[in-house]
Length: 514
Ligand code: FAD
Image 1: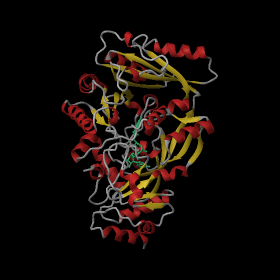
Image 2 (image 1 turned 180 degrees about the vertical axis):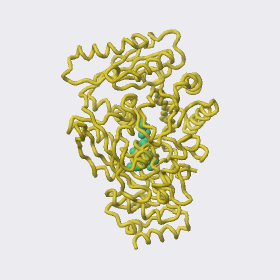
Image 3 (image 1 turned 120 degrees about the horizontal axis):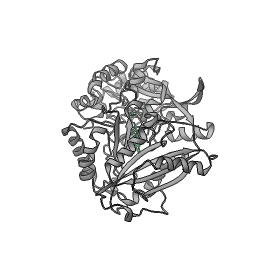
Image 4 (image 1 turned 30 degrees about the vertical axis):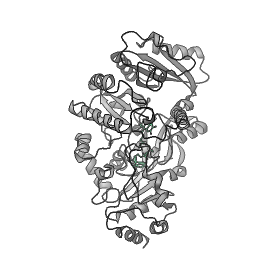
């Protein structure tokens, strides 16, 4: 009866669902424990961190839990052309968590639904809500249990469901794999509205399909995340290279070593060989007191330089000389420019919340809320030298007004049963170009440059994938998934025949934001 009311509300808009200001009508129609917002109250769901698109939903649903989500999906599935999108913390760049005239499910309202420690055969896990922020998972796990997840993203104001729908990578992924390699069970409300628990052995097609599944199989309401003892402290170190081959040689050396024989975190970035406050030398020092001495850079230094960023975990009870010795032992194998090294010691939680501090600064300077035309790529080791020559040394040699990350990952740490598409080679690089437009080129220039880079990768036949993909054509998606295309489509059809993939709608339409 109530669902029929929603049917009528939407049908009356002549097929194309349009935002409807009648909150009570929609709310009553689905009969939720949570709430339904329409009109101006949906504003948050019509934008994202990218700030490139503005797309109005019909309604923003704030579910109390899985039952509400199930009801909303079932209601939506009865309405032609109705689409549903889960919204985590809306930190996508290209509108991935938006839907035009559809229902947006605000997962943040379910944050508190799950938080339970489990000890399964001597290993610890935490059951958390899909709408929980990783920063809260971190602080709660460390303060209550002295335990922490093993694999992170650089920035933690992202939801569990949002990063698991992509991959979730940072400097720990070379050892533990991405976040999607560190969950053992999910509860998902499928596109049919079924509340389903899945794992490697129970409904495995749904489990693996949803990991890296771009929100296309259903809505992750709970995840079981592997934990390990949290270290107390981290020594965070940056060293500088003038030569790309030496930088990659050392980075690959570190990520290929066995546990206990390398750093606990390995990342890197490219910066300009000049005094530009955003793109240049000042981007390197961790310890502002000591600064950056450009006089040490060898004459061979070109327009861009490379910074390897590593971290070493330790406990407060460890003697300082033991830590110094272990770190020195690892550093002595590396060929960075002597003297161009910066380091700080900080708590493990402070280290993992390092981008939060940058966010606070950026907010104070008014640059956090400007658009972010960011580009993330996975590029095969076999093509990374070409990429450096053309992209870093030519196209972006003057900087982009934000970080340019580059670090290696190991394919063998990823499970090829998930939905994520990766380059073929065992070692591939994450490259992230992250401009803040108020500090660099305009939005249009950055978007055009991103397009130029991707087109160049395609033209040159590079073995690469877009990370956080957002293609606008079926051809683009087919190329992206390659051999995995059929598996993705078949899996999706079995879990989401109607609601999320509504008749006449499909992944391309939902992510195609024209
Ligand atoms: P949203 O943007 O809200 O959603 C992302 C996608 O997931 C959408 O398709 C949405 O429909 C779907 N979705 C959301 N919740 C669910 C759910 N519960 N169930 C099913 N589908 C769902 N990524 C990395 O891997 N490593 C990084 O270091 C990293 N750093 C970042 C730093 C910043 C400052 C920002 C803005 C982003 C960063 N990202 C990084 C990218 C980030 O992981 C993705 O954008 C992620 O999707 C954002 O999470 P979110 O909770 O905001 O998701």
